[in-house]
Length: 152
Ligand SMILES: [Zn+2]
Image 1 (cartoon, rainbow, N blue to C red):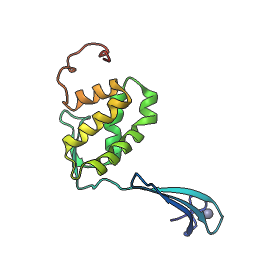
Image 2 (tube, rainbow, N blue to C red):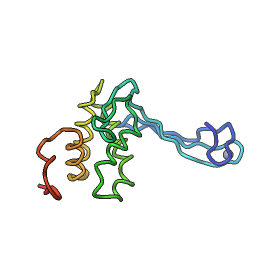
Image 3 (cartoon, rainbow, N blue to C red):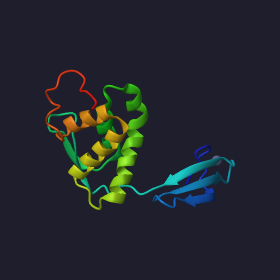
């Protein structure tokens, strides 16, 4: 891996740790040229052969291979009520969903992905979960509701 500081071609691993309960590896690397130390994190990625339905632009949304950035955007679309959470949490939430899908579902379908996003959002922000559910047709009763849906 190249150095993030000086782009030198060689860095060496000075320390590494595997998670005992999660599938991921943390590594400390050091540049052989400038001595800069940085950290990398290796974790599994969801197979891109999985096709997912993304709602959003266009009435029917799009069907496309799984993409973390598209998942992030579809989660971000559920945070129209909270721009700070949208900025800060859309990507980490998408990463959480991806890791859950890898460990809990072998060949996730679009429905599995939508259900997992909904489950993760419900734990995080019920209003975002409601917006997501409405956009994905997970619940029908929210569509014509006026104003802010009541939480609980
Ligand atoms: Zn360097």
